[in-house]
Image (cartoon, rainbow, N blue to C red; front, side, top):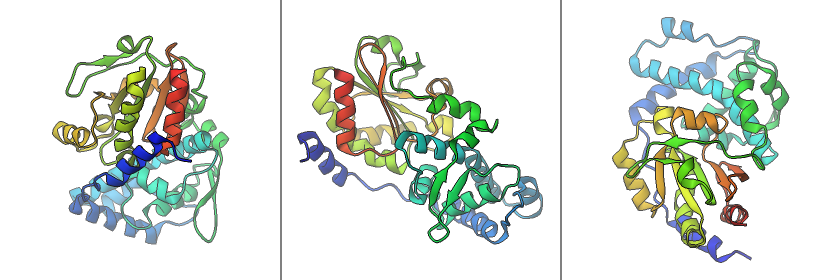
Length: 302
């Protein structure tokens, strides 16, 4: 039976506003890059970005789209392994698309094809031949690869039962936030960025969580990673988003040092529930159902 908080969270989620439409110009340029790559990626042949720059994509918007995909390429394995470790199963293509804002049809599948076709990389994933969905993620292979392993090892080493790392973050619309202010208090550190679809679904759930557990001592800090991820959202847009979702808890910037301290966060949203001793009692990634958030909050308050 759904709890009182679960009902409240579900109603708020259903009432949440839709995401703003993506930048059409950027999406069009990325679509041209994606369609070209779909036609030219071959098994056993790496995608050489410098050749694409020099011979194929010379317009500024196309090169910007290529840069974004190149950056995402090195983050995809981290996301796959982190999701596998945190949930016990690989992410779906839809979840992959949500996480990296792959808006062009077939773009998530293309990124996996590029990953699989590159002879410089070990076989990191296995996929269903018919659906293209990931059936297995080789976390050990990703960990052993120096391009991914160092950052990932800290991320998936197992947060629960570990002391939460110290941090200090510049406040958004308020004073700075850090470990000192949270010492002795059960709290949730919520890592998110603007336009992240699972973050958008989570946003209204946090206000209900605060209403239920704030009076019992749970503090919530929303750490925004827009600047670190180079997401083109303004402070005014974040303020409006927070107001629309009823956020009255602390908000701060998740700068590179804070992201690094918490295992080079690569899956958004990420939730770190910390108890009064400063110990992480629950670590969750991606969209979470209301009941999961409620259970984690109760663990932090125990």
